[in-house]
Amino acid sequence: MSRVRVLIADDRPIFRAGVQGMLRDFPEIDIVGEAVTGRQAVEHTRRLKPDVVLMDLNMPEMGGIAATRAIKEEDPERVVLALTVSEAEEDIVEMVAAGASGYVLKDVDPVTLARSIQDAHAGRFQLNDALTRRVIMRLGATLKRPRRPPAEPLTERETEILQSVVEGKGNKAIANRLGLSEGTIKSHLRNIYRKLRVQTRAEAAAQAVQLDIDRTDVRYRQA
Image 1 (tube, rainbow, N blue to C red):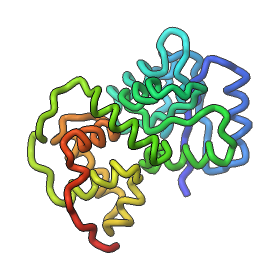
Image 2 (cartoon, rainbow, N blue to C red; image 1 turned 90 degrees about the vertical axis):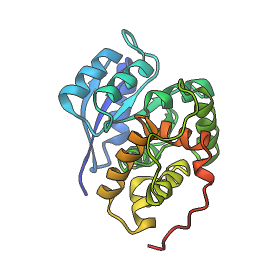
Image 3 (cartoon, rainbow, N blue to C red; image 1 turned 120 degrees about the horizontal axis):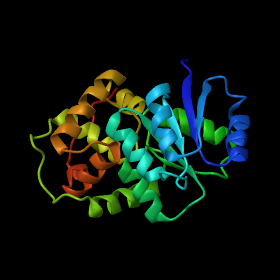
Image 4 (cartoon, helix red, strand yellow; image 1 turned 60 degrees about the vertical axis):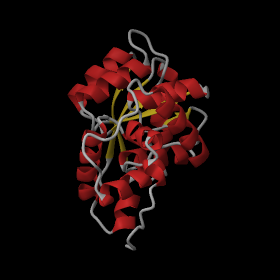
């Protein structure tokens, strides 16, 4: 199993040390750096190219939401996972809208944190199913673009994949469901983003909800 390279972005040294300690017993996770400001998080991500950035919301110079947005604008494939104390739905929606692949609270246990990092790296959105749906619905209502159809019609396969994204399925789970490779799923997702005029997985899911694409009756082929 390949190691997941992680950057920790938080302004409190004690918390960064705590995360390092929590993840020390997981050989599949490698901490490659730390950032104490949002601006540093952007710069270190550019230089170190971590697989996953653990991002706090409240940091000096540039907050976690703005830093996440900057990272995703530079590299849409980079994974950012929020790790914070706030349970406010507004914060979750804003972070997801900025491009975060999920939202984990700081009272998480080591096993759950490690699993969340691995799942986010694998393309699975990190929220429980009920909250995922609520956040996607709210994000769909707050997208700063009018409701409009895709630039090009989605294929049946793309619709199947998009439905799975709305369900919160990761790339591996979608690949297994459809009998495809993860690389093929990623390629389809890039086409879906282009057609929907979005940049993130969460925006694609929200756009699907806006357009009722997630309710289209498409039968999944058995893997």
